Image (cartoon, rainbow, N blue to C red):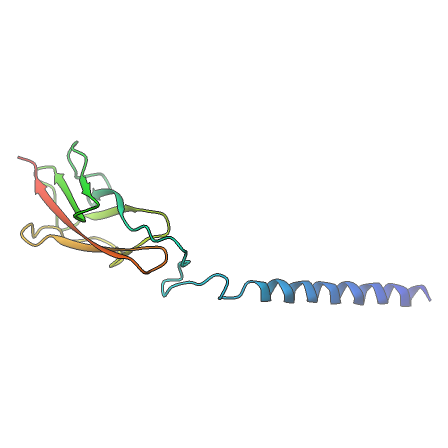
Length: 143
């Protein structure tokens, strides 16, 4: 008789665990937490801007001068000055974006900024994926 009560409790615990798992899984549907093609969470934020910019050399040290880059969020431009002699064919740009925004194209490695006559362009996409602002990065070389 004691064995049957133990088995009944064990089956009840297993059933309760299964139901809890099923309800937890169903409560985390994709409709509650939509994600984009990169697997990033889509939010309700419409803000879309760059707050900081860095340019690192192949040794992961900054190639920018002591002058802080000028970021114009209205004109969507970034003006940065690099140290004389910097290898602009192999740099790693780093953008600090507003919360939940993302950058397009993605930066996956070294970038060539050596063609100063044709500045690079990057698009910032808002957290809700509705607002897109293209920033132009102008690089000048320290005299």
